[in-house]
Image 1: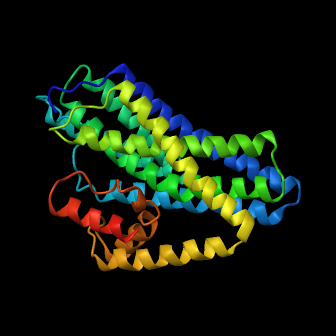
Image 2 (image 1 turned 135 degrees about the horizontal axis):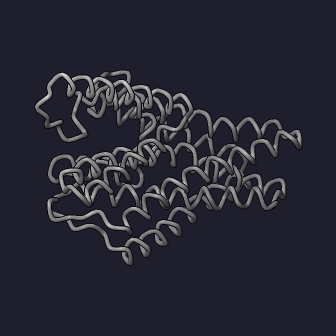
Image 3 (image 1 turned 180 degrees about the vertical axis):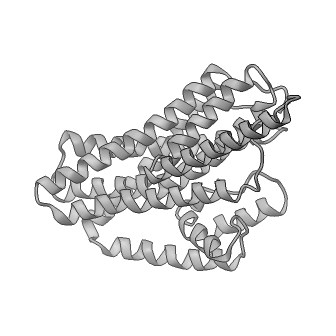
Length: 305
C-alpha cells in the first residue's frame, strides 16, 4: 500500500460518488412532493418512506461506527515540546470532531461528511504517504454505507418509479430523471465499493480509469435488467411480486442471522445490520476482502440466493 498514490482520477471518482448520492436524494424528494401536489398520497408515502428510513439507518450505522472505532487515531500524533499546548489542542480538536459528527448526522449528512474526510485524507496523502491508509479506511466505510443506502433507497425507488411509469402512464421528466439517477447511483455505489475493496488489499493494484468505466457500464446493464424485470412483473401481476420478494428477504435474513456474523459490537445491531445488508448480498460483494474461510462462507451465502 505504501507504493500507491491518491490521483486526480481518484478524487474525481469520489466526487462523482458524493454527487450521485446527493442527486439521488434530491430527485427522489422532488418526486415525492410532485405526488403530494397531485394528491397521489399512496405514491407520495412510499416515496418518502424509501427516502427517510434508509437515511436514518445510514446515519445510525455511520455514527455508531464512529463511536465504536476504539478511539483509533486518524491523524498523525502531535509532535511538540509544549505538552500543555498539545493537550489543549487535542481536546479542542476532539470536541470539534464530535460536534461536527453529531451535527452532520442530525442533518442527515453523515455520508457527505465521510466523503469530505476521504478527500481530505487523500489530498493530505499527496504530501504525506502515511495519510493514504486513513483515506483507504475512510473510503471503505463510506462505500459500505453507500452500498447499504443504494440497496435500501435507490433500488426500491427505481422499482417503484418504473412501476408507476408503466402502471399509471406517468412518464414526466421528473419521474424519468429520478429513475435514471437512481440507476446511476446504484451502479456507482456497487463499483465504488469494489474499488474500495481493491484499495484495501495490499496485494492488489488500484483499478484503472478505463477498467472502471467499463465496469460501471456493465453494472448499469446488470442492475437495469434486474430492476426493469421486477418493475414489469409488478405492473403485470400486481403486489404479489413484492410479497414473494419480501418472503424471500425475510427467509434469507433469518438464515443470515443464524450464520452468526460479527460486523457489529452488539447482538441487536448485528441483527439490524444483517436485516439491511441482506438486501444486497445477492451481488456477492460483501466480505471478499479476505481469502479463505470468509470467502467460502460468502460463496455459500450467494449460492443460497
